[in-house]
Amino acid sequence: MATNTFERKICIQSPNAVRRLSHAMNPKNNKANSVSLYTNEERIRSEELLKQLLFPSKRS
Image 1 (cartoon, one colour):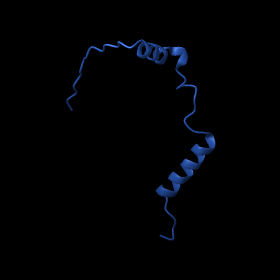
Image 2 (spheres, one colour):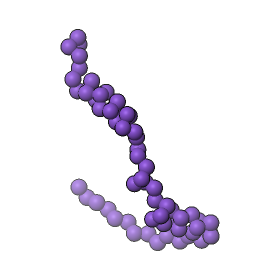
Image 3 (cartoon, rainbow, N blue to C red):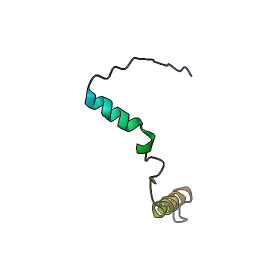
Image 4 (cartoon, helix red, strand yellow):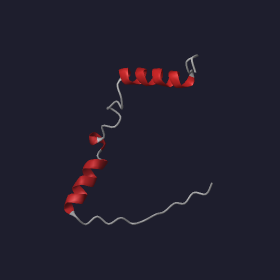
């Protein structure tokens, strides 16, 4: 499969945009690793629903 890479110069002129970008790129503000996407209860429920799809009841 072919992959294209594009390099483009980005020019940020607004002081507000510079501040927001700096805030977003600061590792101290990155909470993605500390926030669980879903709870353990939701995970268990999802696994049970998946099992129901993988192993349909004998009535069908």
